[in-house]
Length: 179
Image 1 (cartoon, rainbow, N blue to C red):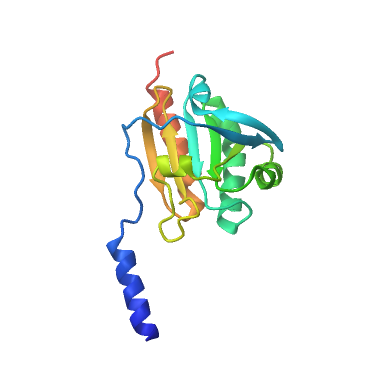
Image 2 (cartoon, one colour):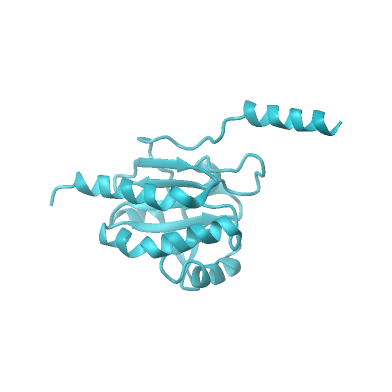
């Protein structure tokens, strides 16, 4: 029976798409939500952030989990370089703002904002729901150009390449801009 269950589960995994993220070139869904930076809550509006440059929007399953902590540390280390390129970084999860206040200080190291999406409206709009545990976001990263178009998308539960890949996308975008 255990082997049968494993086979059925394997079949379901193979039958499902690995992820269903928004594609490059589509308009990024606009949103406003409660976010926090350095433990201080504020209202984050994508439209406002795009006025200053591209936005690196990344979804992660849950604050203080091992992979999400690694990813937050890596984004924190790269935030100054993102800012030098004119980009804003924001992470999104289902966590409550009280949890994110702590996460923004300890794991994001006061470098970039994280936003609360408790009702998953943003996560769903960006097709970033983790299908095996739909109450969580998948680990999906986007780069959104100031025009509001998605110029890069990457989904992988392993956090290792999200920062490097989004940095390369922002650098590529920056190289196409006229001074």
